[in-house]
Amino acid sequence: MRIGMMLRAADEKGGIGVYSRNLVKELLAIDSENEYVLFYASDQNLGKHAHHPNVTECVIKGSGKLWWDQVSMPLACRKYKIDLLFNPKFTISLLAPCKTAMVFHGADWFIPEHAQYYDKWDVRYIKLMMPWYCKKCTFILSVSEITTDNFNRFLDLPEGKVITTYFGPAKHFRRIEDTDALKKVKDKYKLPDQFIFSLSGYDRGTRKNIDKLLEAYHLFHGKAPHKLVLGGRDCYKFKKDYNVPDDGWGADILFPDWIDQEDLPAIYSQATVYLYPSNVEAFPIPLTESLACGTPIITSDQNGLREIAGDAARFVNADDPASIAAAIEEVVTSPEIQQKLSAAGLERSKTFGWDQCARKTLDIINRHG
Image (cartoon, rainbow, N blue to C red; front, side, top):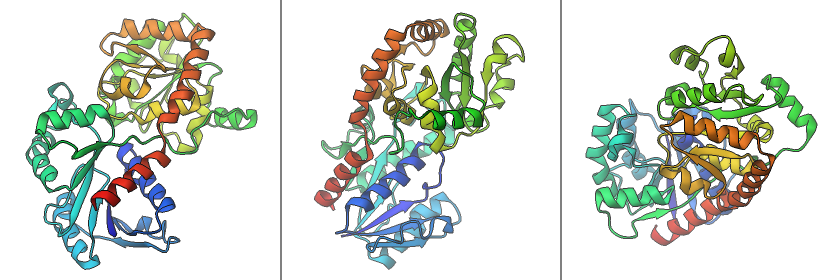
């Protein structure tokens, strides 16, 4: 079979970019029977997978996302004689002359309390087009059971068309014990001895509930020596947006900006707790990273957060800073709770991995393609 992979999202910094890059890498590592044509939107990825004899890489030009998806890709499918066109994102080429498949990363557009975090025109567009995408697809993968259930409920899809396939953190996420490696990362980001860790890009602040997170830390401050490390691209802008003071509790918040992927395991491993009271999540990648590193987790009791964390987290009301603050105090002041959550996290992490994801995905492709 000749499989075309739509990799327009391969360079995205968020979860879909992580998903796209890792899925392609793992599929190519285990599948030497099928042929793969990797369609990029830019030439910076050319050659990345050229060492695989069953891979063809090419750049497809387009004047915008819509044109790339709906005009350039169908033409490319004809040119390269594609049998199955697979998009790791949540759109598909309606005029593709072959079987198609896509991936659901959440159903937020159809849930009013979640849709508020997105541009209203994007929400309208997705609501209009998603039924057509679903009808065109031969099969659809979903990153979580809650996402599968939501789409089946909102769009009344045929039974079995959407298949839940968990993925996981990159393979380098594991608990780091080497003291030199830990110190190197600690010095690089000027980390404190004891800290609470969280991640959010500036553009995702509302969805990640940063205002309640900061308010909770304010309430907690002074009850233990732990500082707050809030990483993510342009995260320092939160300080101005949420009026974080330069002194007092505000002085104990560090904004290290973008954190390199290779450094994250050492940060997770040194954090006393990973704090993630997010408002909207289907498959929260940072939770799988925390689990793999054995970092105790405090997260919201909603969406896909409980599904992914299982019994390896303290769950809080995301709308209640006092609840979040109480959970922080409970965990950081109790070595017994930390040890219990850490052990549960390491065990829970066995559920999520790219090996399992790639093998299940390949099996579905072979059965339906």
